[in-house]
Image 1 (tube, rainbow, N blue to C red):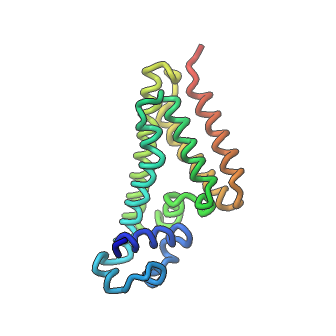
Image 2: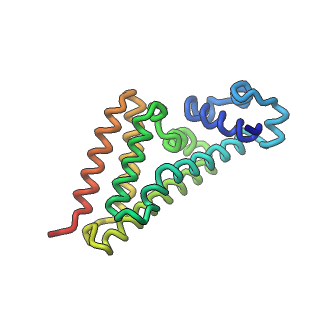
Image 3: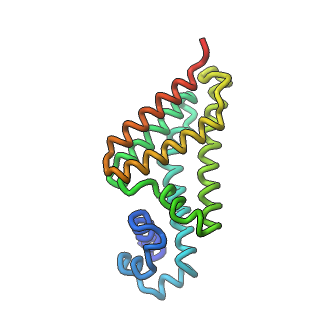
Length: 197
């Protein structure tokens, strides 16, 4: 593994565990076994590394959550939304889920104090909401979902519930909290999405 990739992976793990501000460059160097000069060869600052970590997290999220679900044209729109919740639940009940959602953690820590991070996080959450909204809209056209479904509001509600579930899972250190909340969200989506008789 080259030094840049090692630094990004190490920083991602430390930031998810300790937070961005509580992770120092020295922490990253110690855990990655990369020298300081090599760090500054690849990155101008910890902030630049932080954005590389953020980009990596987004690629992993899209690869594990979005592509197999919302981008999967072999599934109906209703199945896509359900599959997305399956993927979120798998992450949330894993050992890493106990650390919370890395995006939610960053949003809580950085949004008020670092405008570029806030903007990047806002765009990320907005893009996920748009993908889910498009799924709902397609379902309305195909008859999977009720024509009166408030697609954008339900998409944003789902994201808010997912983030809240990660927060409670982290606070309680209990994967059952995540499982229970995602199941309730699944029921709400199914009820709201059900076509009128």
